[in-house]
Amino acid sequence: MSRKIYVGNESQNLLELDKDLKLKVLYEDPEVIVTMAPNESELKDIVLDMLKSEPKTIKDIHSKLAGIASEDKIRRCLTKLVNEGIVVVDEEGRYSALGSNKFDGEIS
Image 1 (tube, rainbow, N blue to C red):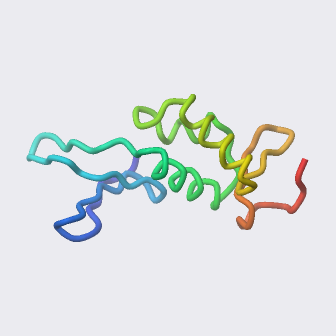
Image 2: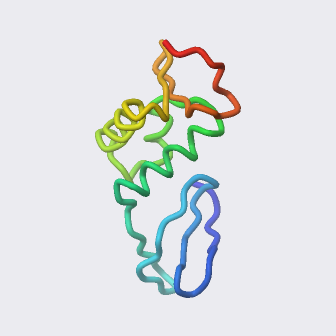
């Protein structure tokens, strides 16, 4: 992952691991930073942010979220987003957010 940057104020410390991934900091000292894994709603937002930049497969998403969210959790999240009509999947298994820059308008 990329460099660590703190965003927000003291009451809401966030650790930015990537442009699409920010986690709440629970504890920090000079040697360790403890963050909280995203809940279902936060995971949905993270996945949607990732899909807005370009279409991704489950493996692509999981590679960014390894150690934070399991592949099953990501798969369930994507299934819910598809069922809600927010995300579409193409014939090659790439997921795209409707309204994203890279979505070509064809739904399979």
